[in-house]
Image (cartoon, one colour):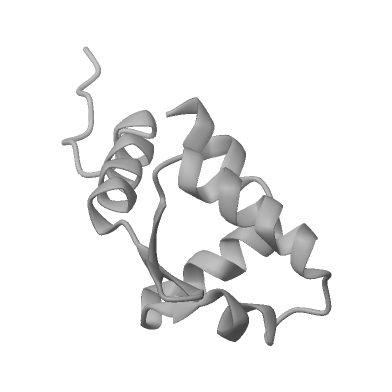
Length: 94
């Protein structure tokens, strides 16, 4: 889970996840959305892959990335649990 939170700490990686939440995209399609060098984006992709947040699938010479929805759902659940979201309020003794 630490790798996931580290990956989410960067705004570029969060934007990549937002884009992939809409649809799977090739590395080139994602690169068109950012004013960054492809090598820089490649580093972001590796961090997201290592955290399990995205899945890469090679198709010929291109790589298609998609969101790993199950890991995203686990992360949301962990954050909700961390802040006791969705649990009944604790009663205080009077």
